Length: 130
Image (cartoon, rainbow, N blue to C red; front, side, top):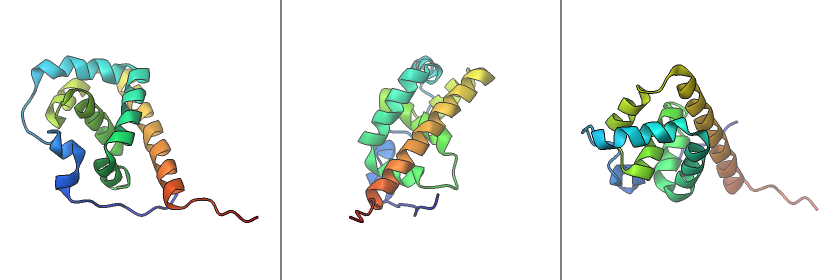
């Protein structure tokens, strides 16, 4: 599936504005992130809400095939829900077992596919040939 990468300046990114890239472990948020990433239903619902709410950073990150978009979905969703930064989400990730990591990655993959399909439909609406 071909689509063009979308760019926005970093100061518009909602994840940047909400502290995702700050370098400070937030120990009080690690368990909340673990619980979210372990719960497929809540993770999916939160990630879908993220993609509807944080327009600029989703366009920048989810149209970039050169990065780990699944990791970004997990990190951004925890930031969106709790204000957790990347370092905190990485600490939470290390508390998950391999099965839980696979499940979280599966959910993130679904979110990415749904997002890209929706974005393509928005940018290239179906032609009415009648």
